Image (cartoon, rainbow, N blue to C red; front, side, top):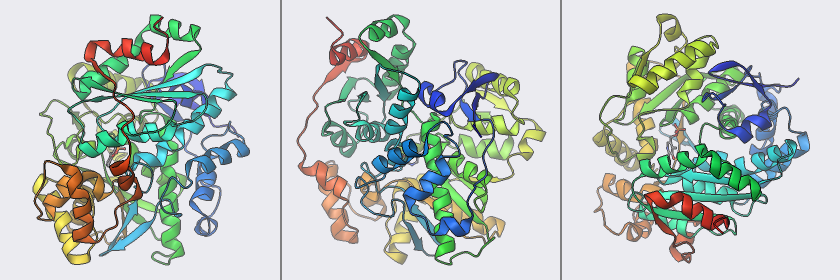
Length: 496
Ligand SMILES: *Cc1c(COP(=O)(O)O)cnc(C)c1O
């Protein structure tokens, strides 16, 4: 049976999966959601024996029903290959009494690789299915992580180009090097003389510029986006939660019928929403534990039913979670309204105009699958240090936020279910903060700390890190904030 997608803000919208992937966002500004969340059509017994790629296939085929089996398998094969430094793709590591689900074994050593390695392939198949002949140009503004993961994913994928904008002084040295050394004849990266918000506004303005759109059409190009609201990013993220449950069963860490809890370091609410979808599909998951850093807008929401972005924005050592608007939360809001697009639209308009909204008591009942917590900077550091001292295992700052929140949840609730913690980045990616947490001196020159982390902890430096240390710098483009469009024209050769 075909599964269609509708908009969280307009129940009239009905598109196929491939159309939803191509469009990214619904025309009314809402997010695409499946009309139903399908139930897993294989048993946990069967899943137990499956590889990551096989699991990906059985999960994703239920969401992408207009893809043929062959098309989907091809996408999976191209995505989850030797780019990952472990055959398991997403290994589970047991430490103390919890399980870390390591989502950082891809090209950029952070969890965005899990979805961005496959999105380019889903996108090109979707284009073919919908008779799109234009070359697809991905425009992305990045504060560090997404940009590189998208570049690595799209590099040399036929029929696509990618242009990434980042704030010249707003990303870490490792992140910058990762981007400016990216190979691929279809990738470009531009350092803008401005901050992340300006990069993002510039990209948004280009997406909305009709004249530019027509000009590009004439040259055989069309824009698309790779950001985390695309269902082509959400669906691949469901896979590793199903996979983790199946592996726990296989290794007899849990019994048939036993449920687990999942703790996720959360920013845009994409990763934890995928865990929720996995639960709805029938994976044996009980609580979804939403972990925030000091930007605890989500914690406050789960506590009070009020979402309020009117507050100070705090810079933390877990920058990928420094967010005040969690876009993917809209999909959960839609579900707890009982799939009421009118109501969802109303709340999202309140968020846009006044920066806050309140959900009804009835809606709050729909949040009972979630628990929430947050940590401050000291707790994050202490968590990294304590776990390392006790077990020798090193986690990054984002993962530490979830680890701390998970431990506190266990303590406060008395819930003794086994817990899987989504481990979203390699400690090498945030080496300065991790070294500081371990009580080592920080250094202006972040790169010099990379070998030191290995020396001290014995945790092997990932190949992706070694690669950037020797790689040649391939990209030098810079521009002023008001020259972004001109720069895109130059790159695409449409400025003549
Ligand atoms: C993006 C990111 C997150 C947050 O994930 P969301 O899906 O936005 O909630 C957490 N940790 C790391 C390392 C990330 O890159």
